Length: 578
Image 1 (cartoon, rainbow, N blue to C red):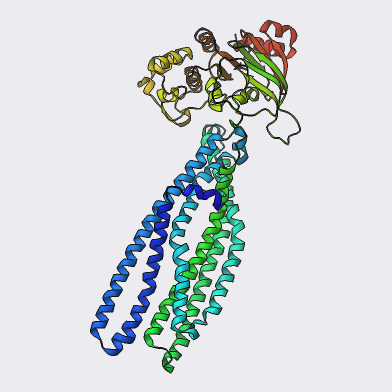
Image 2 (image 1 turned 90 degrees about the horizontal axis):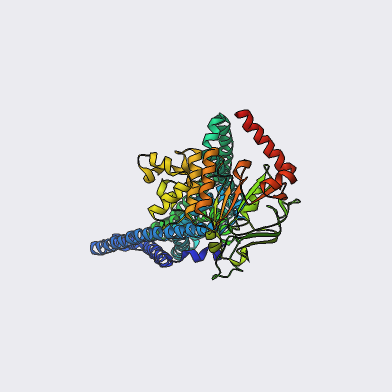
Protein backbone atom coordinates (compact mmCIF):
# COMPACT_ATOMS: atom_id res chain seq x y z
CA UNK A 1 0.00 0.00 0.00
CA UNK A 2 2.79 2.45 0.91
CA UNK A 3 4.46 1.70 -2.41
CA UNK A 4 1.21 2.48 -4.23
CA UNK A 5 0.58 5.75 -2.38
CA UNK A 6 4.18 7.05 -2.27
CA UNK A 7 4.13 8.50 -5.84
CA UNK A 8 1.37 10.89 -4.73
CA UNK A 9 3.75 12.61 -2.31
CA UNK A 10 5.33 14.22 -5.39
CA UNK A 11 5.38 17.99 -4.95
CA UNK A 12 5.40 17.80 -1.16
CA UNK A 13 8.42 15.61 -0.40
CA UNK A 14 10.74 18.55 0.30
CA UNK A 15 8.16 19.90 2.77
CA UNK A 16 8.01 16.48 4.43
CA UNK A 17 11.80 16.33 4.78
CA UNK A 18 12.02 19.89 6.11
CA UNK A 19 9.14 19.29 8.52
CA UNK A 20 10.73 16.09 9.85
CA UNK A 21 14.06 17.90 10.34
CA UNK A 22 12.31 20.70 12.25
CA UNK A 23 10.57 18.15 14.51
CA UNK A 24 13.85 16.33 15.17
CA UNK A 25 15.71 19.57 16.04
CA UNK A 26 12.82 20.67 18.24
CA UNK A 27 13.19 17.40 20.17
CA UNK A 28 16.92 17.98 20.60
CA UNK A 29 16.44 21.42 22.16
CA UNK A 30 13.68 20.17 24.45
CA UNK A 31 15.87 17.29 25.63
CA UNK A 32 18.79 19.59 26.42
CA UNK A 33 16.71 21.90 28.60
CA UNK A 34 16.57 19.53 31.65
CA UNK A 35 20.37 19.17 31.59
CA UNK A 36 20.82 22.94 31.81
CA UNK A 37 18.21 23.08 34.55
CA UNK A 38 20.09 20.40 36.52
CA UNK A 39 23.31 22.46 36.28
CA UNK A 40 21.46 25.52 37.62
CA UNK A 41 20.36 23.52 40.68
CA UNK A 42 23.51 21.46 41.29
CA UNK A 43 26.11 24.12 40.40
CA UNK A 44 24.59 27.58 40.34
CA UNK A 45 22.25 27.36 43.35
CA UNK A 46 24.51 25.06 45.34
CA UNK A 47 27.54 27.36 44.93
CA UNK A 48 25.53 30.60 45.02
CA UNK A 49 26.95 31.53 41.59
CA UNK A 50 24.48 34.17 40.36
CA UNK A 51 26.39 34.78 37.11
CA UNK A 52 26.25 31.07 36.27
CA UNK A 53 22.50 30.99 37.02
CA UNK A 54 21.81 34.00 34.78
CA UNK A 55 23.99 32.61 31.98
CA UNK A 56 22.34 29.19 32.15
CA UNK A 57 18.89 30.77 32.41
CA UNK A 58 19.53 32.85 29.28
CA UNK A 59 20.69 29.70 27.54
CA UNK A 60 17.40 27.98 28.49
CA UNK A 61 15.35 30.90 27.18
CA UNK A 62 17.18 30.85 23.83
CA UNK A 63 16.83 27.06 23.56
CA UNK A 64 13.11 27.32 24.37
CA UNK A 65 12.66 30.02 21.71
CA UNK A 66 14.47 27.91 19.12
CA UNK A 67 12.31 24.91 20.06
CA UNK A 68 9.17 27.05 19.74
CA UNK A 69 10.20 28.36 16.33
CA UNK A 70 11.09 24.88 15.09
CA UNK A 71 7.80 23.50 16.41
CA UNK A 72 5.83 26.21 14.64
CA UNK A 73 7.78 25.64 11.44
CA UNK A 74 7.20 21.90 11.65
CA UNK A 75 3.44 22.46 12.04
CA UNK A 76 3.31 24.79 9.01
CA UNK A 77 5.37 22.44 6.85
CA UNK A 78 3.27 19.44 7.93
CA UNK A 79 0.11 21.32 7.02
CA UNK A 80 1.44 22.21 3.54
CA UNK A 81 2.66 18.67 2.87
CA UNK A 82 -0.51 16.94 4.08
CA UNK A 83 -2.84 19.24 2.14
CA UNK A 84 -0.89 18.75 -1.07
CA UNK A 85 -0.77 14.99 -0.53
CA UNK A 86 -4.53 14.92 0.01
CA UNK A 87 -5.12 17.03 -3.11
CA UNK A 88 -2.88 14.68 -5.16
CA UNK A 89 -4.78 11.62 -3.94
CA UNK A 90 -8.19 13.13 -4.65
CA UNK A 91 -7.11 14.25 -8.13
CA UNK A 92 -5.61 10.83 -8.90
CA UNK A 93 -8.71 8.96 -7.75
CA UNK A 94 -11.04 11.29 -9.65
CA UNK A 95 -8.96 10.91 -12.83
CA UNK A 96 -8.98 7.13 -12.38
CA UNK A 97 -12.76 7.05 -11.94
CA UNK A 98 -13.10 8.91 -15.25
CA UNK A 99 -11.41 5.93 -16.92
CA UNK A 100 -13.81 3.42 -15.37
CA UNK A 101 -16.46 1.66 -17.36
CA UNK A 102 -19.94 1.32 -15.88
CA UNK A 103 -18.97 -2.14 -14.67
CA UNK A 104 -15.93 -0.76 -12.79
CA UNK A 105 -18.13 1.82 -11.06
CA UNK A 106 -20.68 -0.85 -10.16
CA UNK A 107 -17.84 -2.87 -8.58
CA UNK A 108 -17.31 -0.12 -5.98
CA UNK A 109 -20.70 1.66 -5.93
CA UNK A 110 -21.04 5.42 -6.23
CA UNK A 111 -21.42 6.01 -2.49
CA UNK A 112 -18.24 4.06 -1.72
CA UNK A 113 -16.27 6.03 -4.30
CA UNK A 114 -17.47 9.28 -2.72
CA UNK A 115 -16.33 8.06 0.73
CA UNK A 116 -12.94 7.05 -0.65
CA UNK A 117 -12.52 10.44 -2.33
CA UNK A 118 -13.44 12.39 0.78
CA UNK A 119 -13.39 10.65 4.17
CA UNK A 120 -10.59 8.17 3.41
CA UNK A 121 -8.34 10.79 1.83
CA UNK A 122 -8.96 13.19 4.73
CA UNK A 123 -7.90 10.47 7.17
CA UNK A 124 -4.70 9.87 5.19
CA UNK A 125 -3.75 13.53 5.01
CA UNK A 126 -4.46 13.95 8.74
CA UNK A 127 -2.24 10.94 9.40
CA UNK A 128 0.56 12.51 7.38
CA UNK A 129 0.12 15.79 9.26
CA UNK A 130 0.23 14.09 12.66
CA UNK A 131 2.85 11.61 11.53
CA UNK A 132 5.33 14.30 10.54
CA UNK A 133 5.03 15.65 14.07
CA UNK A 134 4.73 12.44 16.07
CA UNK A 135 6.41 9.66 14.08
CA UNK A 136 9.73 11.47 14.40
CA UNK A 137 9.24 13.45 17.58
CA UNK A 138 7.79 10.67 19.75
CA UNK A 139 10.36 7.91 19.00
CA UNK A 140 13.31 10.32 19.07
CA UNK A 141 12.12 11.84 22.35
CA UNK A 142 11.51 8.38 23.77
CA UNK A 143 14.91 6.94 22.86
CA UNK A 144 16.92 10.08 23.65
CA UNK A 145 15.17 10.71 26.96
CA UNK A 146 15.63 7.05 27.90
CA UNK A 147 19.38 7.23 27.16
CA UNK A 148 19.76 10.49 29.11
CA UNK A 149 17.73 9.10 32.02
CA UNK A 150 19.93 5.99 32.16
CA UNK A 151 22.96 8.28 32.09
CA UNK A 152 21.64 10.08 35.18
CA UNK A 153 20.83 6.93 37.15
CA UNK A 154 20.97 3.35 35.96
CA UNK A 155 19.35 2.09 39.14
CA UNK A 156 16.40 4.49 38.91
CA UNK A 157 15.94 3.67 35.21
CA UNK A 158 15.19 0.02 35.98
CA UNK A 159 11.58 0.98 36.56
CA UNK A 160 11.25 1.30 32.77
CA UNK A 161 12.09 -2.38 32.32
CA UNK A 162 8.61 -3.07 33.68
CA UNK A 163 6.69 -0.06 32.32
CA UNK A 164 7.67 -0.09 28.62
CA UNK A 165 6.82 -3.80 27.96
CA UNK A 166 3.52 -3.36 29.84
CA UNK A 167 2.47 -0.42 27.66
CA UNK A 168 3.62 -2.24 24.50
CA UNK A 169 1.50 -5.29 25.32
CA UNK A 170 -1.49 -3.09 26.12
CA UNK A 171 -1.21 -1.20 22.81
CA UNK A 172 -0.86 -4.42 20.79
CA UNK A 173 -3.95 -5.93 22.43
CA UNK A 174 -6.06 -2.84 21.74
CA UNK A 175 -4.88 -2.48 18.11
CA UNK A 176 -5.62 -6.16 17.40
CA UNK A 177 -9.21 -5.57 18.52
CA UNK A 178 -9.67 -2.19 16.84
CA UNK A 179 -8.17 -2.79 13.38
CA UNK A 180 -11.03 -4.99 12.03
CA UNK A 181 -13.53 -2.45 13.36
CA UNK A 182 -11.95 0.36 11.32
CA UNK A 183 -12.67 -1.51 8.07
CA UNK A 184 -16.26 -2.03 9.16
CA UNK A 185 -16.44 1.64 10.15
CA UNK A 186 -15.57 2.79 6.63
CA UNK A 187 -18.06 0.33 5.11
CA UNK A 188 -20.78 1.65 7.44
CA UNK A 189 -19.90 5.16 6.21
CA UNK A 190 -20.38 3.91 2.62
CA UNK A 191 -23.82 2.56 3.56
CA UNK A 192 -24.86 5.83 5.18
CA UNK A 193 -23.71 7.84 2.17
CA UNK A 194 -25.72 5.54 -0.09
CA UNK A 195 -28.95 6.28 1.79
CA UNK A 196 -28.29 10.04 1.72
CA UNK A 197 -27.42 9.98 -1.98
CA UNK A 198 -30.51 7.97 -2.94
CA UNK A 199 -32.79 10.14 -0.83
CA UNK A 200 -31.50 13.46 -2.20
CA UNK A 201 -31.47 12.38 -5.86
CA UNK A 202 -34.93 10.81 -5.58
CA UNK A 203 -36.49 13.47 -3.36
CA UNK A 204 -39.48 13.97 -5.67
CA UNK A 205 -40.25 10.25 -5.67
CA UNK A 206 -39.95 10.08 -1.89
CA UNK A 207 -42.37 12.97 -1.42
CA UNK A 208 -44.83 11.84 -4.08
CA UNK A 209 -45.11 8.41 -2.43
CA UNK A 210 -45.14 9.95 1.07
CA UNK A 211 -42.16 7.82 2.09
CA UNK A 212 -40.43 10.39 4.31
CA UNK A 213 -40.92 8.36 7.49
CA UNK A 214 -39.64 5.16 5.87
CA UNK A 215 -36.58 7.00 4.55
CA UNK A 216 -35.96 8.48 8.00
CA UNK A 217 -36.14 4.97 9.46
CA UNK A 218 -33.71 3.64 6.84
CA UNK A 219 -31.31 6.50 7.58
CA UNK A 220 -31.73 5.93 11.31
CA UNK A 221 -30.82 2.25 10.97
CA UNK A 222 -27.68 2.98 8.93
CA UNK A 223 -26.75 5.84 11.25
CA UNK A 224 -27.23 3.60 14.29
CA UNK A 225 -25.02 0.92 12.72
CA UNK A 226 -22.32 3.52 12.07
CA UNK A 227 -22.62 4.87 15.61
CA UNK A 228 -22.45 1.39 17.10
CA UNK A 229 -19.29 0.52 15.17
CA UNK A 230 -17.74 3.89 16.05
CA UNK A 231 -18.50 3.38 19.72
CA UNK A 232 -16.84 -0.03 19.68
CA UNK A 233 -13.77 1.19 17.81
CA UNK A 234 -13.22 4.41 19.72
CA UNK A 235 -14.40 2.81 22.96
CA UNK A 236 -11.29 0.63 22.93
CA UNK A 237 -9.17 3.71 22.28
CA UNK A 238 -10.79 5.66 25.11
CA UNK A 239 -10.30 2.62 27.35
CA UNK A 240 -6.59 2.69 26.54
CA UNK A 241 -6.07 6.29 27.69
CA UNK A 242 -7.01 5.95 31.39
CA UNK A 243 -5.00 2.74 31.64
CA UNK A 244 -1.96 4.49 30.25
CA UNK A 245 -2.46 7.45 32.58
CA UNK A 246 -2.66 5.00 35.50
CA UNK A 247 0.64 3.44 34.42
CA UNK A 248 2.23 6.89 33.94
CA UNK A 249 1.23 8.22 37.36
CA UNK A 250 2.19 4.94 39.03
CA UNK A 251 5.61 5.19 37.40
CA UNK A 252 6.05 8.80 38.57
CA UNK A 253 5.13 7.79 42.13
CA UNK A 254 7.62 4.93 41.98
CA UNK A 255 10.36 7.25 40.71
CA UNK A 256 9.56 9.80 43.44
CA UNK A 257 9.72 7.09 46.12
CA UNK A 258 12.94 5.47 44.93
CA UNK A 259 14.58 8.75 43.89
CA UNK A 260 13.71 10.42 47.19
CA UNK A 261 15.48 7.65 49.08
CA UNK A 262 18.48 7.98 46.78
CA UNK A 263 18.71 11.74 47.41
CA UNK A 264 18.33 11.12 51.14
CA UNK A 265 21.15 8.52 51.00
CA UNK A 266 23.33 10.96 49.03
CA UNK A 267 23.64 8.70 45.97
CA UNK A 268 21.75 11.19 43.74
CA UNK A 269 21.83 14.98 43.54
CA UNK A 270 18.57 16.99 43.74
CA UNK A 271 19.17 18.62 40.34
CA UNK A 272 19.75 15.24 38.76
CA UNK A 273 16.51 13.94 40.28
CA UNK A 274 14.63 16.97 38.90
CA UNK A 275 16.14 16.28 35.45
CA UNK A 276 15.26 12.61 35.80
CA UNK A 277 11.65 13.55 36.58
CA UNK A 278 11.55 15.64 33.43
CA UNK A 279 12.90 12.77 31.34
CA UNK A 280 10.46 10.36 32.96
CA UNK A 281 7.62 12.64 31.92
CA UNK A 282 9.05 12.90 28.38
CA UNK A 283 9.45 9.13 28.15
CA UNK A 284 5.93 8.38 29.35
CA UNK A 285 4.33 11.08 27.19
CA UNK A 286 6.32 9.78 24.20
CA UNK A 287 5.07 6.27 24.93
CA UNK A 288 1.52 7.57 24.96
CA UNK A 289 2.08 9.47 21.69
CA UNK A 290 3.61 6.39 20.06
CA UNK A 291 0.58 4.33 21.08
CA UNK A 292 -1.73 6.99 19.63
CA UNK A 293 0.30 6.99 16.41
CA UNK A 294 -0.13 3.23 16.12
CA UNK A 295 -3.87 3.59 16.67
CA UNK A 296 -4.05 6.32 14.04
CA UNK A 297 -1.94 4.27 11.63
CA UNK A 298 -4.29 1.30 12.07
CA UNK A 299 -7.18 3.31 10.70
CA UNK A 300 -5.02 5.05 8.09
CA UNK A 301 -3.89 1.66 6.77
CA UNK A 302 -7.53 0.66 6.25
CA UNK A 303 -8.27 3.95 4.46
CA UNK A 304 -5.05 3.69 2.46
CA UNK A 305 -5.95 0.23 1.21
CA UNK A 306 -9.40 1.45 0.15
CA UNK A 307 -7.84 4.35 -1.76
CA UNK A 308 -5.24 2.03 -3.31
CA UNK A 309 -8.05 -0.30 -4.48
CA UNK A 310 -9.42 2.55 -6.59
CA UNK A 311 -6.00 3.61 -7.91
CA UNK A 312 -5.01 0.05 -8.86
CA UNK A 313 -8.38 -0.95 -10.33
CA UNK A 314 -7.89 -1.97 -13.95
CA UNK A 315 -10.39 -0.19 -16.23
CA UNK A 316 -12.38 -2.81 -18.10
CA UNK A 317 -12.44 -0.73 -21.28
CA UNK A 318 -9.15 0.77 -22.49
CA UNK A 319 -7.42 2.05 -25.63
CA UNK A 320 -4.77 -0.68 -25.52
CA UNK A 321 -5.61 -2.01 -29.02
CA UNK A 322 -6.58 1.37 -30.51
CA UNK A 323 -4.99 3.24 -33.41
CA UNK A 324 -4.65 6.91 -32.28
CA UNK A 325 -4.77 8.11 -35.90
CA UNK A 326 -8.00 6.30 -36.79
CA UNK A 327 -11.16 8.43 -36.96
CA UNK A 328 -14.80 7.49 -37.50
CA UNK A 329 -15.50 8.26 -41.17
CA UNK A 330 -19.20 7.37 -41.28
CA UNK A 331 -22.08 6.27 -39.07
CA UNK A 332 -22.46 2.67 -40.19
CA UNK A 333 -22.96 0.17 -37.34
CA UNK A 334 -22.64 -3.60 -37.43
CA UNK A 335 -23.30 -6.15 -34.68
CA UNK A 336 -21.57 -9.44 -35.54
CA UNK A 337 -22.81 -12.34 -33.38
CA UNK A 338 -22.70 -10.21 -30.23
CA UNK A 339 -23.33 -11.70 -26.79
CA UNK A 340 -23.35 -9.70 -23.58
CA UNK A 341 -24.01 -10.21 -19.87
CA UNK A 342 -23.63 -7.66 -17.06
CA UNK A 343 -22.04 -10.12 -14.65
CA UNK A 344 -19.47 -12.63 -15.98
CA UNK A 345 -20.75 -15.32 -13.60
CA UNK A 346 -24.41 -14.89 -14.59
CA UNK A 347 -25.96 -17.95 -16.21
CA UNK A 348 -28.06 -16.22 -18.85
CA UNK A 349 -27.15 -13.63 -21.50
CA UNK A 350 -28.62 -10.14 -21.54
CA UNK A 351 -27.99 -9.99 -25.28
CA UNK A 352 -27.98 -13.16 -27.37
CA UNK A 353 -26.46 -13.54 -30.85
CA UNK A 354 -27.16 -10.02 -32.11
CA UNK A 355 -26.64 -9.81 -35.87
CA UNK A 356 -27.60 -6.62 -37.67
CA UNK A 357 -25.99 -4.23 -40.15
CA UNK A 358 -27.02 -0.56 -40.15
CA UNK A 359 -25.89 1.57 -43.12
CA UNK A 360 -24.65 5.10 -42.51
CA UNK A 361 -27.24 7.88 -42.56
CA UNK A 362 -30.36 5.73 -42.01
CA UNK A 363 -32.91 6.01 -39.23
CA UNK A 364 -33.32 2.88 -37.10
CA UNK A 365 -36.13 2.35 -34.61
CA UNK A 366 -35.91 -0.12 -31.72
CA UNK A 367 -39.07 -1.39 -30.04
CA UNK A 368 -39.49 -3.89 -27.25
CA UNK A 369 -40.93 -4.52 -23.85
CA UNK A 370 -39.38 -3.56 -20.54
CA UNK A 371 -36.26 -5.64 -19.92
CA UNK A 372 -35.79 -6.62 -23.55
CA UNK A 373 -32.25 -5.08 -23.50
CA UNK A 374 -32.89 -2.15 -25.84
CA UNK A 375 -30.73 0.25 -23.84
CA UNK A 376 -28.09 -2.43 -23.34
CA UNK A 377 -27.83 -2.89 -27.10
CA UNK A 378 -27.15 0.77 -27.91
CA UNK A 379 -24.76 1.12 -24.93
CA UNK A 380 -22.35 -1.22 -26.70
CA UNK A 381 -21.90 1.19 -29.62
CA UNK A 382 -19.90 3.88 -27.70
CA UNK A 383 -18.32 1.13 -25.52
CA UNK A 384 -20.10 2.10 -22.34
CA UNK A 385 -20.08 -1.67 -21.88
CA UNK A 386 -17.90 -4.26 -23.60
CA UNK A 387 -19.38 -7.20 -25.51
CA UNK A 388 -18.41 -10.56 -24.02
CA UNK A 389 -18.47 -12.31 -27.39
CA UNK A 390 -18.73 -11.17 -30.97
CA UNK A 391 -17.77 -7.79 -32.39
CA UNK A 392 -19.31 -4.36 -32.79
CA UNK A 393 -18.11 -2.31 -35.75
CA UNK A 394 -18.59 1.40 -36.44
CA UNK A 395 -17.54 3.03 -39.70
CA UNK A 396 -16.26 -0.32 -40.96
CA UNK A 397 -13.83 -0.82 -38.07
CA UNK A 398 -14.07 -2.66 -34.76
CA UNK A 399 -14.88 -0.17 -32.02
CA UNK A 400 -11.77 -1.44 -30.20
CA UNK A 401 -9.61 0.02 -32.98
CA UNK A 402 -10.72 3.55 -32.09
CA UNK A 403 -9.58 5.47 -29.06
CA UNK A 404 -12.47 6.03 -26.65
CA UNK A 405 -12.23 9.77 -27.34
CA UNK A 406 -12.51 9.35 -31.11
CA UNK A 407 -15.35 6.83 -30.84
CA UNK A 408 -17.42 8.76 -28.31
CA UNK A 409 -16.89 12.04 -30.13
CA UNK A 410 -18.62 10.40 -33.08
CA UNK A 411 -21.52 8.98 -31.04
CA UNK A 412 -23.97 11.24 -29.21
CA UNK A 413 -26.47 9.72 -26.81
CA UNK A 414 -29.63 11.18 -25.34
CA UNK A 415 -30.15 8.89 -22.40
CA UNK A 416 -33.39 7.62 -20.94
CA UNK A 417 -32.54 9.46 -17.73
CA UNK A 418 -31.82 13.02 -18.80
CA UNK A 419 -29.17 14.89 -16.84
CA UNK A 420 -28.55 18.63 -16.71
CA UNK A 421 -25.89 20.33 -14.63
CA UNK A 422 -26.03 23.43 -12.49
CA UNK A 423 -25.23 26.46 -14.63
CA UNK A 424 -26.86 28.38 -17.46
CA UNK A 425 -28.76 26.81 -20.34
CA UNK A 426 -25.96 27.93 -22.67
CA UNK A 427 -23.32 26.23 -20.50
CA UNK A 428 -25.34 23.01 -20.47
CA UNK A 429 -25.73 23.04 -24.24
CA UNK A 430 -22.02 23.60 -24.74
CA UNK A 431 -21.39 20.24 -23.12
CA UNK A 432 -22.23 19.04 -26.61
CA UNK A 433 -19.51 21.18 -28.16
CA UNK A 434 -17.52 23.70 -26.15
CA UNK A 435 -16.71 25.98 -29.11
CA UNK A 436 -20.27 26.16 -30.48
CA UNK A 437 -21.38 29.64 -31.57
CA UNK A 438 -24.62 31.25 -30.40
CA UNK A 439 -26.05 30.72 -33.90
CA UNK A 440 -25.25 26.98 -33.79
CA UNK A 441 -26.76 26.73 -30.31
CA UNK A 442 -29.95 28.43 -31.51
CA UNK A 443 -30.16 26.12 -34.56
CA UNK A 444 -29.81 23.01 -32.39
CA UNK A 445 -32.52 24.29 -30.04
CA UNK A 446 -34.86 24.95 -32.98
CA UNK A 447 -34.33 21.38 -34.20
CA UNK A 448 -35.08 20.05 -30.70
CA UNK A 449 -38.17 22.31 -30.36
CA UNK A 450 -36.55 23.93 -27.33
CA UNK A 451 -36.19 27.49 -28.63
CA UNK A 452 -39.78 28.43 -27.83
CA UNK A 453 -39.62 27.82 -24.08
CA UNK A 454 -36.04 29.11 -23.79
CA UNK A 455 -37.06 32.47 -25.29
CA UNK A 456 -40.00 32.56 -22.89
CA UNK A 457 -37.58 32.68 -19.93
CA UNK A 458 -36.65 36.24 -18.87
CA UNK A 459 -32.94 35.45 -19.15
CA UNK A 460 -33.20 33.28 -22.26
CA UNK A 461 -30.08 31.16 -22.78
CA UNK A 462 -28.58 32.64 -19.60
CA UNK A 463 -31.35 31.14 -17.46
CA UNK A 464 -29.81 29.30 -14.52
CA UNK A 465 -30.45 25.55 -14.32
CA UNK A 466 -30.53 24.09 -10.84
CA UNK A 467 -28.67 20.88 -10.04
CA UNK A 468 -30.21 18.00 -11.99
CA UNK A 469 -32.48 20.40 -13.90
CA UNK A 470 -34.99 20.54 -11.06
CA UNK A 471 -36.36 23.94 -12.15
CA UNK A 472 -37.46 22.79 -15.63
CA UNK A 473 -40.12 20.27 -16.63
CA UNK A 474 -39.38 16.75 -17.83
CA UNK A 475 -40.24 17.64 -21.42
CA UNK A 476 -38.06 20.76 -21.34
CA UNK A 477 -35.19 18.77 -19.88
CA UNK A 478 -35.51 16.16 -22.65
CA UNK A 479 -35.50 18.78 -25.40
CA UNK A 480 -32.43 20.51 -23.93
CA UNK A 481 -30.62 17.17 -23.84
CA UNK A 482 -31.62 16.50 -27.47
CA UNK A 483 -30.32 19.95 -28.48
CA UNK A 484 -27.07 19.24 -26.65
CA UNK A 485 -26.62 15.99 -28.60
CA UNK A 486 -27.46 17.63 -31.94
CA UNK A 487 -24.92 20.36 -31.25
CA UNK A 488 -22.21 17.71 -31.07
CA UNK A 489 -22.60 17.03 -34.83
CA UNK A 490 -22.03 13.29 -34.38
CA UNK A 491 -21.86 10.51 -36.96
CA UNK A 492 -24.32 8.46 -34.88
CA UNK A 493 -27.15 9.92 -32.80
CA UNK A 494 -28.85 7.62 -30.28
CA UNK A 495 -32.16 8.45 -28.60
CA UNK A 496 -32.91 6.13 -25.68
CA UNK A 497 -36.65 6.70 -25.22
CA UNK A 498 -35.75 10.38 -24.96
CA UNK A 499 -38.98 11.86 -26.33
CA UNK A 500 -41.28 10.08 -23.88
CA UNK A 501 -42.00 13.31 -21.98
CA UNK A 502 -43.05 15.33 -25.02
CA UNK A 503 -46.38 15.20 -26.83
CA UNK A 504 -46.77 13.38 -30.14
CA UNK A 505 -46.92 16.62 -32.14
CA UNK A 506 -43.62 17.86 -30.70
CA UNK A 507 -42.15 14.38 -31.17
CA UNK A 508 -43.09 14.51 -34.87
CA UNK A 509 -41.59 17.99 -35.26
CA UNK A 510 -38.31 16.84 -33.69
CA UNK A 511 -38.13 13.81 -36.01
CA UNK A 512 -38.83 16.00 -39.04
CA UNK A 513 -36.07 18.42 -37.99
CA UNK A 514 -33.63 15.53 -37.59
CA UNK A 515 -34.38 14.28 -41.10
CA UNK A 516 -33.99 17.78 -42.51
CA UNK A 517 -30.98 19.05 -40.58
CA UNK A 518 -28.99 15.81 -40.06
CA UNK A 519 -29.34 13.88 -43.34
CA UNK A 520 -25.99 12.07 -43.14
CA UNK A 521 -26.23 11.11 -39.47
CA UNK A 522 -27.23 7.59 -38.44
CA UNK A 523 -30.16 7.96 -36.05
CA UNK A 524 -31.05 5.14 -33.66
CA UNK A 525 -34.31 5.72 -31.80
CA UNK A 526 -35.53 3.59 -28.90
CA UNK A 527 -39.23 4.29 -28.40
CA UNK A 528 -42.32 2.95 -26.73
CA UNK A 529 -44.65 4.63 -29.22
CA UNK A 530 -44.87 3.03 -32.65
CA UNK A 531 -45.65 6.48 -34.10
CA UNK A 532 -42.16 7.64 -33.10
CA UNK A 533 -40.44 5.03 -35.29
CA UNK A 534 -43.05 4.16 -37.93
CA UNK A 535 -41.22 6.14 -40.60
CA UNK A 536 -37.79 4.65 -39.78
CA UNK A 537 -35.80 2.96 -42.53
CA UNK A 538 -35.33 -0.09 -40.32
CA UNK A 539 -37.09 -1.20 -37.13
CA UNK A 540 -35.70 -3.79 -34.72
CA UNK A 541 -38.10 -5.64 -32.43
CA UNK A 542 -36.34 -6.77 -29.26
CA UNK A 543 -37.59 -9.62 -27.09
CA UNK A 544 -35.75 -11.04 -24.09
CA UNK A 545 -32.29 -9.97 -25.26
CA UNK A 546 -32.49 -11.00 -28.90
CA UNK A 547 -33.80 -9.49 -32.11
CA UNK A 548 -37.21 -11.03 -32.67
CA UNK A 549 -37.84 -9.34 -36.01
CA UNK A 550 -36.57 -6.53 -38.21
CA UNK A 551 -37.92 -4.61 -41.19
CA UNK A 552 -39.97 -1.56 -42.08
CA UNK A 553 -43.23 -0.62 -40.41
CA UNK A 554 -45.31 -2.28 -43.14
CA UNK A 555 -43.17 -5.42 -43.18
CA UNK A 556 -43.34 -5.88 -39.43
CA UNK A 557 -47.11 -5.47 -39.36
CA UNK A 558 -47.20 -8.54 -41.57
CA UNK A 559 -44.34 -10.60 -40.09
CA UNK A 560 -44.07 -9.76 -36.34
CA UNK A 561 -46.84 -10.62 -33.91
CA UNK A 562 -45.13 -8.61 -31.15
CA UNK A 563 -44.94 -5.47 -33.28
CA UNK A 564 -48.46 -5.91 -34.59
CA UNK A 565 -49.87 -6.38 -31.08
CA UNK A 566 -48.14 -3.23 -29.76
CA UNK A 567 -49.32 -1.23 -32.75
CA UNK A 568 -52.93 -2.38 -32.42
CA UNK A 569 -53.01 -1.67 -28.67
CA UNK A 570 -51.69 1.83 -29.21
CA UNK A 571 -54.12 2.49 -32.06
CA UNK A 572 -57.01 1.36 -29.87
CA UNK A 573 -55.76 3.63 -27.13
CA UNK A 574 -55.66 6.58 -29.52
CA UNK A 575 -59.19 5.79 -30.73
CA UNK A 576 -60.53 5.55 -27.18
CA UNK A 577 -58.77 8.77 -26.22
CA UNK A 578 -60.21 10.46 -29.29
